[in-house]
Length: 443
Image 1 (cartoon, rainbow, N blue to C red):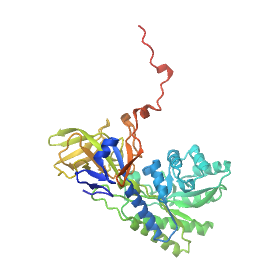
Image 2: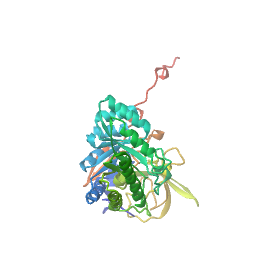
Image 3: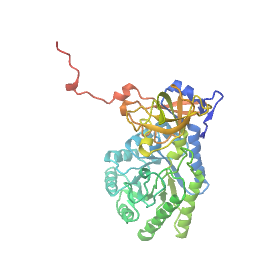
Image 4: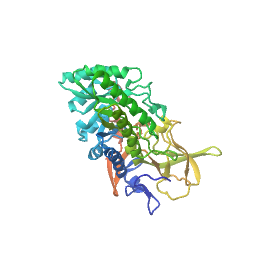
């Protein structure tokens, strides 16, 4: 059993995180329940910050809020000195409501609406990461209407395919994101941006994928992006001051996952940038990165109550939990794998192999296949590890199932940071037209 962060088994044989007994959390907050190890989140952030400080380079570490965006997480990111990456008006609104400094917010997205751009302009955010030619013109026009000059990075696809799932690999040429480096589109985007009076070009952004366990992809991407910056300097006389290398740093979900220490990724990135820039006498730019999963992923645990079971002799035994694809769609989307234990009987010896089914009305609602557990009983608590990223963020109300609560745990205290949805929340935006209103039955 691999235990992340402050997770341990206490004297009662119960799983404990942040000094909080998960059986007690289930009684207090109900299940399903997302439990976030605040100490581990802060540790992960500090690993990135310390690694970059050791390089002596200028840098920004921006939390990729798409991984897990709630106001409490935005506050934590600010406290730890991070910038913040948002990709929608909802994420931007969340950050602003949390009081996150707008000057440290970067706005991403391949299809920003005029309304979203105006909202960001009114908030005076720090930087737009521009994804296409349509957005370039739209942003310049809207900024002009506001009498504003805005900082921009151009998102480029460097032609690097990371070792990751095809749905989350974003650096290759055939991608919905960014200006392609290989066919000259990125260079034309720079030329066009320099002619737009209300945009200030800081540099470029790239992102090669997610859940990456090696440094070669990052090194290659750095070399391509830095070489592009040198080409722009030499041909157009424009010197980039920022290179954003995105995120994608892997975490451990199951045995066999081999994430590298944060410092190894950072060292590879910084060494490649320094070597490329020194060779061309190019001033060292400020380096930005955007970790999301690697900040919150392994700090999250989802707690379920086990309900029914179905044993098919000679085939498989299913156990069903009170959540599933509505609070974790990743297995259905990507075939993602997880490890789990019984939180209320963590020391018991595994005696059977079961597959964990969700309660949604979909045969594909399976969380874990072939999991070794003690003999499972109705009412047991199942703790699924490494669910801090893209679980709450992707949760839905399919079957009108209410989304779970979220608690931060630290030093024996559990703080509710997202309340469990109520039945009123489920129907809160529903409207019934007058013609469908229930009429008195005439006798």
